[in-house]
Image 1 (tube, chains in turn cyan, purple):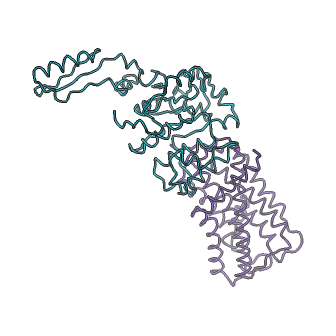
Image 2 (image 1 turned 90 degrees about the vertical axis):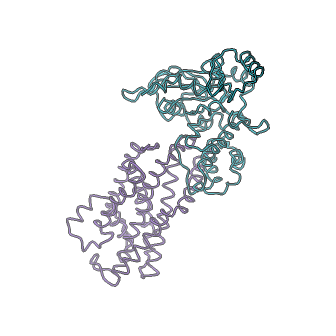
Length: 312
Length: 257
């Protein structure tokens, strides 16, 4: 697995939530509950009947290609857009009618939002802290999002990844229960994404509920307890990253080169088949060049579910 | 949390950002000073044939104060709000518990304070450099005129943002509206040199009326009550129209992208 974190790493973003946590969160009241959500822009139906639930303390990924209806949905949940139909409850209230006390409980990271270039990191957080009745201490938030060395730097001089971590900090400074992150790492280089992922995984450790939209499968896989895939305004799959689209029951591929020829075998019993294959190879002194065992990755599942290959 | 505490918080940050932004410091603070120095240098020593003939510098001091107040309010608000809106910063702010009125009044308060400061700077320079007396006896009338003008042009600036589609369009649209009106309203060219038709045209807009109201209260030769209620009323009507348009059409979310 690419970029696996060491077990001692803080945030341990590569680990899924513990079973105890999952059970506890499944028993709690849903933080977000959506039934039959629809949103049309004139003739175009951006969201066509979405149902989903997000429970307290989980990181929920809303995964889908560009234009699938992710941002429309998340902006309805944030209270920025009005829905055309269906029922929406966020922290027990309808976002269209929710007021200041509701806004005290949520934090929002927008997909596209610049920072005020004339404020420093600490000042940007201080400005937003002043909007809330019980904010987290600013210096604590600076550390939480890993900007300790940049606290007094103007935001204009931060890298894209650092700016995005400050965005998260500004959503976090009011100490909300629920955070919305709309495509938090789009356009990032791998190292900036790693840093952003660490920050987001840290949110889970703080006990926050996170609603994350993304079009990166690996991001959903790394961060989320549960993933729901949306395509063309409709939900096409839902589950944990491991069992999404029944990935567990799909065949495993064993491939190697023998006498310069590529061999690839699909099997539902990889342990026994691999044992037999390697046993025979050792007996006969054969070299199985480039021997590989691959499970169908989430990307294959994702592409087949969203029908990306067949579109056009 | 009380609204006043929130307002003070917002105002403090707006001040910080204003003084750190080189564009706002140049166009709002430095530019009126430069204009005063240029006009006084080029036309100094002549007389303007208004109110029985006065020094050009005595004419230009209230003229540039007029420009500076409009610049600190209408121009500065329209520009900074469009930039913040298209950056997504207004949308982000709306996602917090901060009430809309706190944000807007913080910005207007910021503009009002800068307008007051510019009044003091231009009046002080006029006194020190050109001997244009500060009409202290008219102070209450000056303050009232400034308040009405600053409030009205702030509302107009906020309303104007609805007509500006992008950050790049902000400066051209604001300047295309204001620069010709400064010329036609007698702010740049003394109005004894403007044809009557031009004055009548300018009378349809608030800049000319604000200038006249300000000129009357600032004229040291004008003793007694000199509040120009008629001119101020027209400025106020424009302000109320701006307020109505602003409440209807002001938007918090970006128009582009």
